[in-house]
Length: 512
Ligand code: NAD
Image 1 (cartoon, helix red, strand yellow):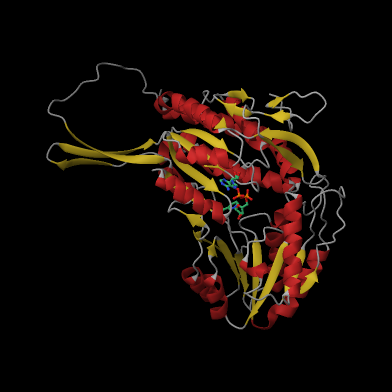
Image 2 (cartoon, helix red, strand yellow):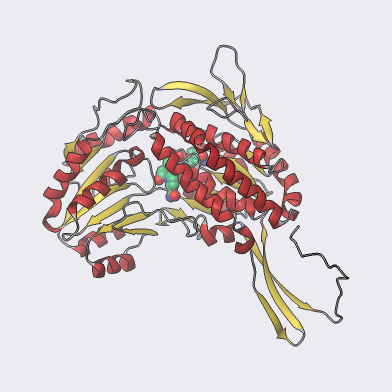
């Protein structure tokens, strides 16, 4: 398998950038719609490839291939299916560095962060390797005289996954290992900004022995999303992206009879109580505010300082923020570029607006000198103090390296602020007071909570998902909720009037 960026799944082009292909029915499929987009290295601003945008007809082709593969895959034994999952895991372990390099080249996040993303996705693959256990149903003997009852869970069929730019590998892996292990066939539409990680993983599946058509990758934009949302043979949609699109996907998908989980945007608060260890809090505010240049749905963007600690805490965070190196993710920097020029301009524009509206710019990333190409899309770490809840830097999801400090007098005010926010993805409290932490986890209206942990991303065997405008639908990603999402339950009630005999076989029983 060829393995590095744009060596795979491309159409050779004389004198131009490579053209990526779709991956349908287990092989590369050149785009046929005539529409395409640029893939850009955000650290240099250079266009590195073109990605085809599929037409509605190509959506039909991919779904048809997935539908054709479904009966065979569904009927493949659990042992055989999970052996392929184990092989995928082994291959991914051996080649994780290649995938991380592809992520850095298209997303921009620093290599160590990209490797961390791959590792968190791999945890879901490992969870899905336990599918035989996860799919076990219940059984009741003699529920009525001579009558037994048992339950099973069965795959849905063709399932669609639509993913955002900020986790090119991990977010698809929140879903597809579980969907595939449970016996479904998958059509993945990755973000058109970061298409190569999905293609690399498709080739890895082929090498792991996954039958053709079980995993397809279709690139594109709204045309593909709408095609999947309305196609009668697509049984479910797993979406991750911004809140307006998540809401649209949920409403359109469910109106078309599909099961939908649509994870949206975020505005995550870190509440620091007066008794907290302020050095720990400052370190973690830096990690969670500026990791991946703030382009994480679990980034901390609002730091709520309670009581009289704000001046000390702000100066500790500022000192650390000024020491960070922003630059090309391949050069051992702390923080990489933003995804596009438009994102760079949008983030800088928010800082301008915050300043106009009265916030204090303590650390200014707008004119950062990056360790990298001057044409990259860089904004350095930015710290705003005295932010109010009516300022756009607070009300909007900025999705960049901008940490806003809000000052309140009491714990009650802090919790009220978090709960009044329309998003409810993640939050954290920093304190040494167990009673306060216990109250917080009980009272706060947010799906994922950290106690002295700033980015509380649940392990694969728990489920990931927020509340309020951060998730539409009632099922979170991975963990047992993920298994339920990708399967349907059946309950079987049985009465046998005659005993049955399996014949004579002295061999040691084995699964097949
Ligand atoms: P986005 O909403 O712009 O795009 C997400 C997906 O939707 C992409 O595949 C894109 O091609 C598609 N899309 C874009 N516009 C569309 C339209 N008009 N109609 C149909 N489909 C459309 O999000 P993004 O910028 O790629 O990702 C960043 C966002 O994702 C942030 O808001 C972030 O908080 C969110 N996010 C949330 C989570 C979570 O778990 N809640 C995780 C990661 C990212």
